Image (cartoon, rainbow, N blue to C red; front, top):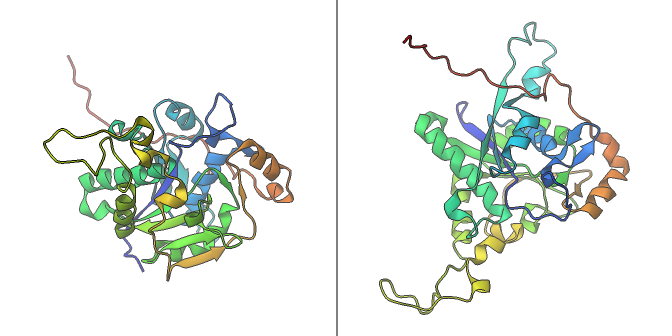
Length: 296
């Protein structure tokens, strides 16, 4: 079990995803139910998973639109719906939402869709580490906006998700390691393993002729920075799930392209998803930190 003060981060990757929708808004904002967007489902999933903070990795071109829809925090559903708490309204637990872009030095080099997961974990660790060693996250939960399933199923597995072992969702034998948009968690040591995998990609120069400090051959443009084209199964190939907690989903639909989205919206399972009550999911802003006004 994790310690009571352990910080678990929810990561929602948006940047680096290529879609064929062709709409003027980002693909993560496709509707999956009445007044309910795909990225909102991911936020709700992180909340049910027990995340203490949620980090959405999106670049500056789409960040204002996503923030305008989601706001700055969501309510923890467990604390919100405690029936026997006489002061439940006063004991609500808001979960802050942070928006971070891909670091410019990684763009067009290793910024594949899988790297968005790593960027969210890296930024959450860096910011938390600057605050206090007690705020440093020990676990990360990933939710993809491009997979549709009921996020409420995670409520009963919060203890396993926060535990020391990995946790992942599966459907018909497929998991995140197969490139499916299914939720999973990873630890600090898994981050290092994934980072080594990303570094197996090529750079600008030919490694066979590379000698530090000397002139060497460059790779053809099409072969440079191969990590930017890594698929999800390639990025998480080295993650070991032996001994991890697995939860089989009763239904799951990928919604990463128009055909898959239409397939999901036409299914009976689409009626099982609905926007949560506004007491949980609604545009809200956190109060700013007070400062003293200096008189001139």
